[in-house]
Image: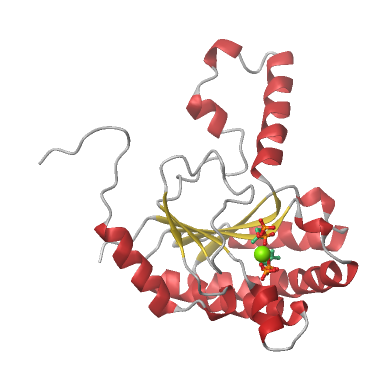
Length: 235
Ligand code: IPE
Ligand code: IPE
Ligand code: MG
């Protein structure tokens, strides 16, 4: 089995999963968070080099205070626990998104986790938190304009590679496979630039139920695909 170098996942369906069981949405997030830990181990075992997950969008602040509070509590615990997960999997963790919106202690945990795990390179794990692709591009363009103003960047030197370097994902190769769980077939503002030639797979399985078997099924389907980049394949 040819394992994709970079897999991106939109972790969706926690709320519906919980509701179906007569439980509050927050319970679905707890289960989803536990599953993220399991799937990280699975990715490492399969030899995936890059994993990027969408955990909280710039639009998700529209949810109820109760749900947001539950999510922040979960992030607080998870970011601390992630130190030992990074040791276990020799995994480098990077948060993409605008973290300045989070409470100071959460920002501190993020910096600590990124610094601690920067010694590893077996699995590169990106977590998108307060991430929106449009926001990422606007923030990047703002920094780019500032570099032009101060003379650090010549507008003539701007090309696709240079633009990519201003995104939160600078230095990370584009995803080969993007999976969205729980049936919705949209991007919801995820990696709009980086997914230009990525293969998409939408599974009806809700995130808390997503397991190794489903992941392998999807990778096998991915292997059957005829990947192209605008050209024609030689026979
Ligand atoms: C994904 O699950 C997790 C987050 C967006 C934080 P949802 O919370 O979107 O669950 P559904 O889609 O409502 O079932
Ligand atoms: C996308 O899921 C964001 C995350 C999974 C973090 P949503 O559940 O928020 O997206 P929509 O609202 O269904 O598009
Ligand atoms: Mg959802």
